[in-house]
Amino acid sequence: MLILKKQIADAIGAAIAAKYPTATVEAAEIAGMLEYPPDPAMGDLAFPCFKLSRTLRAAPPAIAAALSESVACEEVARVEVAGGYLNFFADRAALALRVVNAVAEEGDTYGSPRCGEGKTVVLDYSSPNVAKPFHIGHLGTTVIGHSLKLLHEFAGYHCVGINHLGDWGTQFGKLIVAYRKWGSREEVEAGEIDELVRLYVRFHAEAEQDESLNDQARAEFTKLEAQDEENIALWKWFIEISLREYQKTYGMLGISFDSYNGESFYTDKMPRQIEVMREKNILTLDDGATVVNLDEYGMPVCLILKRDGSTLYPTRDIAAAVYRRETYDFDKCIYVTSAGQSLHFAQWFKVIELMGYDWADRLVHVPYGTVSINGAKLATRTGNVVLLKDLFAQAVEKARAITAEKNPNLENLDEVAESVGVGAIIFHYLMNNRMRDINFILEDALSFDGNTGPYAQYTYARTASILGKAGSAGKMCAYEMNEAETLLVKTLAAFPEAVKNALADYEPSVITRYILDLCAAFNRFYHDCQIVTCAEEAVREARVAMTAATHTVLGRALSLICMKKTEKI
Ligand code: ARG
Image: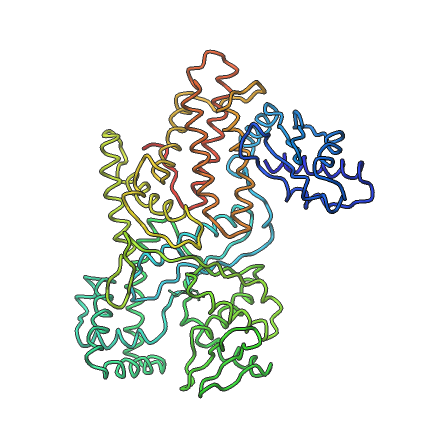
């Protein structure tokens, strides 16, 4: 509807200029005021005139009446005045012809806002902490981050996906101690990350009884920092074991990264930035630690160096940002983490600004809420975690059982079960606004009937099956459509705006909800209209064309939120 919206906004602008020559109202401002009426009986777009009554110094109904006399545009069949509203009724046949043909012509580039050409976006997401479990708390950063990457790519941006691995820090001292005390090479090779997590959890349990373990861990980390050969070898091996595991999860999600430069990569890049902070005179001492005071900005100090001179999480982020800016010359650098880290990002973004980097305003933090499973919260240290891979495995198994029952003759059951199982989790997760705290219930996610991933993939497969039966992509024509057809066309027309909003708000859930709207509209159309069996040839062709358009747009929308397109379920 973006095109229609623009046409109408321009027409209203022209009418205002004609009727109220002294007033100036921007077309973009008008477009922002246009609303989608809740009930189609009230038109396809509505203009609330009260928003202009101040500027135009007139009562809303008077404005509506005056504008209605001279507002006219191509794709609008009629305009009605209803109190202070101007209601626009689209010329539906014209709209349908334009939209369905546009999808046929543009294919799966239909809906791209094309605003990213020549621009680069760096996205920092997933970024698990090596040797700690990759648990469902990371689901958010992984799927929101990757969807944002796909959305930006769709808009034409050059994207660089970075996995900022948590591969440095005192946890490695703990793991080295635990491994030497209670582990063995064979057990780690066999148990992989599970064994590392077991050692990590055991360390914390034993350290409760024996404080000295923590001192030993600190000592081992200090040795690691000093490049002790044996510790470095262990550290590299732990990372390798962990990455092997992450790759399996990323493989299931169809995710790969352009860079796995983790925190350790910035070790030699920090001194230069600390020097810049010195030059800018923003460093102060705070109880022995070196910090940037942010009182003036209503935030606690940003820690740069500990008492013992070692660097911290923010120090590494600052060095990483400068490195990325120099390496990729980004227009935007996006960080996706839980909302628990919002203060951390606000603080060091401010430090970047105080360091005099004029690109500080290109750093964007995208936070999200917490996740629990069946009501249970997560805790890494006690080992009470749901691992992402276990959640996926469980979902895939259930999806396999359901799919096998529905369609016993399916050839590629394994592949479909994985797409549906993993897709169910992604979809369920991305259905809500990212800031909302989510309680995950697997049963609900996997239902084929509710507003779920399997339902969306099933609808997609249905469009594929109809097109298979039709044998062609159909041909659109302008004709008097029924309500179900009109709704489908309007929903297809709404896709470009959904993409635009998802990008503007860094909110993949806009796409998820769009998918549900499109599925609902298509399934109603499927229920109400004969498609392949329609006796009237022109109408049959048109309905097949609408089905083909749905196939294209639904497929594109699913892939924008990291879901696989299942031609057959
Ligand atoms: N490793 C961190 C964690 O798991 C997330 C890192 C996010 N990215 C960053 N540049 N700080 O909490």
